[in-house]
Length: 140
Image 1 (tube, rainbow, N blue to C red):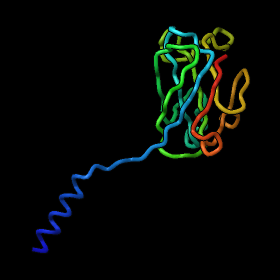
Image 2: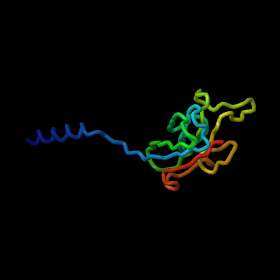
Image 3: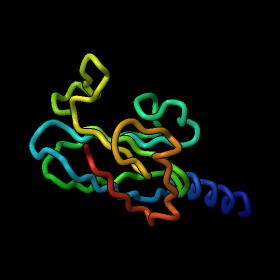
Image 4: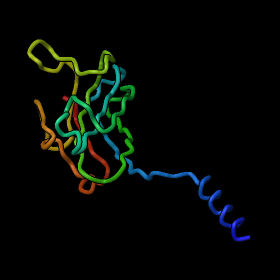
């Protein structure tokens, strides 16, 4: 009898799905050229800081650029410090196109205290506890 009960408990535990809880980060991007290409959002964490802004990232999202201001939901594993790089990939070649001087030819932007020009992981850094899981990025 005890063996049957234990077997039943183990079977029940085995079929219960394992759920990984995630927080949703709302990224609002303004300055988008509506109807042109895709908006590509890359989220970097401490483990990917040396890759910022155009290398390997923690997670990425690409959505069609449908409006001048867009809000994209990104599921992140936990609250903490992140940096975000955004490009509007006008020609959908999955990279930021630059001219012969290295100046971007497509709209781009970063999280944090960035205003214009290049950025660093430290300048783009923000803490989800400080921003309440919502951040706005302006494309230049």
